[in-house]
Length: 233
Image 1 (cartoon, rainbow, N blue to C red):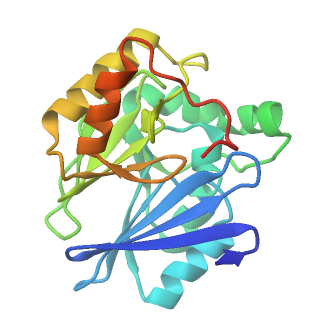
Image 2 (spheres, one colour):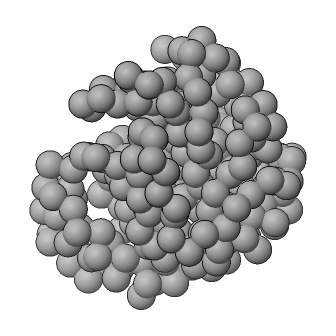
């Protein structure tokens, strides 16, 4: 389904509905809406673009937004944060080591895509994500390398990996805050911690399982390909 140049996909996993919006014509970034079906509590992950569409989808579904989580604040992942945050009166959360990058996101949006995004004024930095008692239950794992503060968000049976680990690619490390050694270590940690059946939802491209990722990781060897062409996936 194509709506205003925004593609939408939906997955159901146990008690959760995961809606993926592919936003932005150039970067094709994945925005995720994670809804606990019973309670309608909703977490938004990386609202990157098309804020009106994100907001309308949540309103149409009767979702109750409890959190906005950012895997990393590159401009294509935070372009809609301010509008969504203001509409639902929810502060966005991100790792403390990426606050400076969040502040610079509007500048990078102009530099990289000649695109204007509003600065984010309501945010809460963390070192380790605070656990809420209500569903959806989520925890964070620090996975630096693509940026200093990149994190993956772990739910029951599925994980959002941002641009750290994509389908048969790893994230770029040549952008501000990137580190080639750190990203390899982060992926090793992530794959070691998760079961093979866990579903990985990346910041760009299609989902896959940890089992599939482990097999690819063994085959890729010491120099896995970096994802730098947003038309490939």
